[in-house]
Image (cartoon, rainbow, N blue to C red):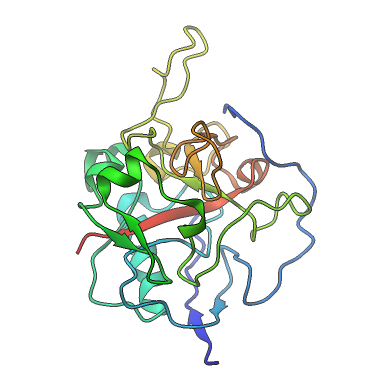
Length: 247
């Protein structure tokens, strides 16, 4: 079978965790063609279904600095083109408080109405359905048609990095960090400095690509521990994002 290469997406320049899901053990390695790494090109086993309009990125950015929303959108477009899906307008499912290009925006308002299809051609639902009934975990796959499932045996590795940046509530609106003085979600935006920060002092809300419960959803699960690579990896993150086609 022909291999489709996911072109190298340059690694962009490099606090509370509500629930931990990793450890600090070193990554023992990756299997070429089946794992993801922020700095290496990967090979997919086949081109994506031409209907693909949703995926979680096979490669992670390795920090919260995605180059803002515009940089995140570009990552989505590049990944889709690399697996043969062209002619679509791609956006990252991310909220921001004051993005340099888009200003204040909620992820739910960026993506259009759907319905969307994953890289295998399976329908995942429309905008209302994915925010009320969620996306079935089995239907969340990368552009390489691979599910991203947490691996207990390799908690800090790329393959199972199931924490996906969203900066959003379960409804798809801007999420904020908990204010330690009040216990309320009224602190800074949980967006790694609107996706420009690799600081250990910032944080972001992530969802789980292999979610299992109503408190552990595809777009809302817990905060990261910082926005730098070392911090992200402590909770099974490597800077992945969800991508949606708006047309």
